[in-house]
Image (cartoon, rainbow, N blue to C red):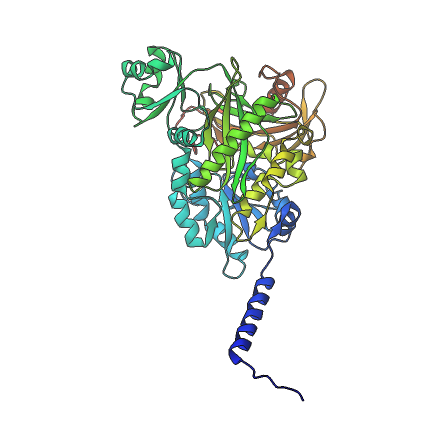
Length: 512
């Protein structure tokens, strides 16, 4: 005889509910697992993504890694030949540009740009954008257009970009800085009093300013008087002991899993052949064993500590640190922070270590893509630190170094140039990528100033990128660098304009 059991409806309901919940959990999109998944994800990307800036220099090559990535630029460096660069054809009336933020705000208000964004929308999704520089006005304009900015807020970036605040963050992170004081300065007598512990040979930096513009070397009252107005107007400046140092740069990315750190690069600073500014950045090199293992390890450790502190402060994404290496005792000190992509990003993102995994900007963008992912940061950093995963590249930022305003009647095109044994160069072929450079007798040139432009002291003429080194081991320009600089300058033909106030469009650097 079969015994029938009474069915408990509550238990059945509970069991069904549990089963449904289990199905929901298993049907959830799985997290991206490591670099291969991340690369595949971006190759299949359907979200409109943009880099909006004066030029596309800082994010060169991003369109090759990410489907649907486009550049919106004010300056068309490739003269219409780059397939993924959009520049408005007609110029609309605008106030005089004083900075990159002004250019970006102009672009976001331009009808051609607005129409371009509309044509690429995915349903109601306008997409996401990166900017080299942006302010709170940019944020409002982007929001109005439905664009999400793939960076922390302008307010946060401005706070961290302040050289005074950078030192305070470094203190919390446990990262050493050159001996310094943070203080207002009222006059030279006051300066000598507040900086007594630092000696008489000083470096003063104001909170903000383009490379080399607001770094002052002061050892006597005469030198102070030359820059007094700029120094005393600030509520607070950074006064440092002057040390015998060489500059270096390192880029990194704060992610939810930790801080990814790229290899340490040398910096070219203050070369009169390239820049009119004594402390001005004018290029980088990356090559195996550029620094001894101890310096490399310190720089990587300090960058991770700083990145971890940035995360605590609420920051995520791309950043760059300048380190000062004391030539007298080998100590590594923090110089400054750039909370963004930078002029060095092109070197970082196209070296072998990045191409073997993924460029640093890919991990930055991933933080804004509303997708879960797993990544072993320790293993990635270990791979990137191996010297066999680094190849040799150099870039030179070529500026107009004379105190003149000149009209450009001829300018070299962007692309690959070849140098002959006699030191002269010739345009060889059009290309949008520096990887097309095959030997040290070739270089990729990206023109910033072109025919019809007006150039002024400090204006960017262009960027020259080549394989191999451009400096000697004692941080001086080598013969090859001088030959390339002379040759590329010879391709520019310009004439002096009498009225220096006429036709000035922008003061400051477009490359950062």
